[in-house]
Length: 471
Ligand SMILES: Cc1cc2nc3c(=O)[nH]c(=O)nc-3n(C[C@H](O)[C@H](O)[C@H](O)COP(=O)(O)O)c2cc1C
Ligand code: SF4
Image (tube, rainbow, N blue to C red; front, side, top):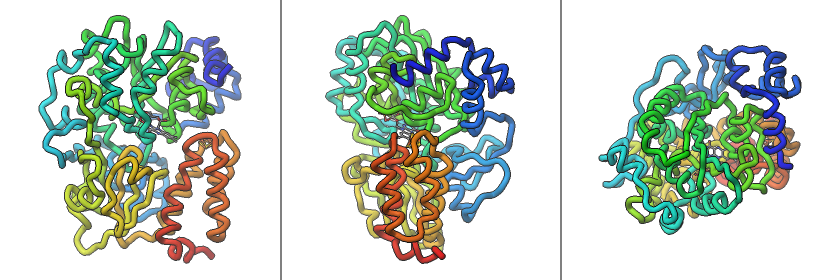
């Protein structure tokens, strides 16, 4: 029995979701009684999530906000990233300014519904014969936009081929990478494209239920999506329903097996893979988990039947004009930063860019001509780009990444739980490299194995700075 099946079985004793009940203010004892979970498990759920307490003003400690604030911790309640990096520094009061959006391509694909001329609702939900959907998506070569660049059709095929009367499709709107806010833009400004993508997936694999997982840091996206589901309902294929799950705050929730545990109301701890969710996911049923941006492109793929050769990037940090930018794959980082981003702010020199979030890659300014493709920049991830200038020391950025890793490790496996908390104490390069080797080789999920990536880049390009300040 897999972890997910096991937990689903325990959950089936209760009638409520532990996370939702705790967020409503119920006591752990009451939640344990109603869910059938052991009290210790309910305490575990309560201590895992950062946003169960509602109505609290939280200061953003994402990378762009920390950079804008001059690093350090502001004190009081914190949140990791509010997806408002373009107006850093920010906190959770107010709704924030609208996201600035631009395109470097004449025909935006990802931002079609935001910048271009989107099709009407009926056209958006129009489907080719259901048995052709998989092959159309396959021949488009579409790869997931959530970070791993996995071929989308391969997952759909696996789910369709797994015998089951129940299948799920889940939109991953966790967008945990500080510095990324493309998904927030799509959830708030083009929710119907996401739902149309889920509907196409449901038709291709025979899914009966869709769940849009939206991180709790994006309350406006939840409200917009609720309305969009009402609009979409008459256009969904027969027997397919969609609901929303609101996240309770934890970076690792974005990892697909952790996400499914969160939906089940449990601690969002990743499971070993295989089995993959496409074969054994929510409640042990075949489940396709797909990033929001990936799903939003599906209607375009189905009507244009060619590769979607552009991607949306989130630009923030030390640039003059931050915002979401759609660009062709292969566009250089320099074109994005200097063209769309307006280059450095007055009197400053750009030093580096952190691309793909805290498990992404650090690109020094002399390498800004690197093209943005999955192969040339494997750490590109979801496409969040936080640019930093000469006010930042590599050591300060490393400490920000150390702190992030230690705080967001879910604690499920020893190399990551212990290793991430030791990173900041590494006395020299050799010790840091030993720790990173352990994380890469021994971690259970992509979080622990991904933490060393930007640190190795910092070592490669800024080693002197990195250890200069170690006592
Ligand atoms: C630690 C960790 C965090 C992740 N966070 C996200 C996330 O916030 N959003 C996302 O779409 N994928 C995230 N992923 C990737 C998902 O596990 C999964 O591959 C993705 O949702 C699949 O969708 P795609 O194929 O459309 O990219 C994360 C992976 C790891 C290891
Ligand atoms: S690698 Fe880290 S985040 Fe992933 S399961 Fe292990 S402790 Fe959790």
